[in-house]
Image (tube, helix red, strand yellow):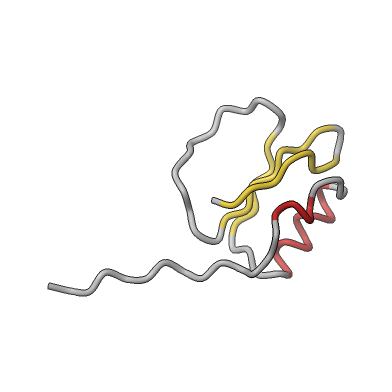
Length: 71
């Protein structure tokens, strides 16, 4: 049987550091820091909740990151 592959490593980065930033700037910064996927969502958006290593989620309100979380 083949070994189970290890999930990709996530950047050593705190999602809380993006809160309050301009959404476009926050997305560029997250990609520079190594996040493979950055997802910007409006408040209350219905989303899938599966965890994906390397993904950073932003809740964006009035052009600013109001909340950020991994997965």
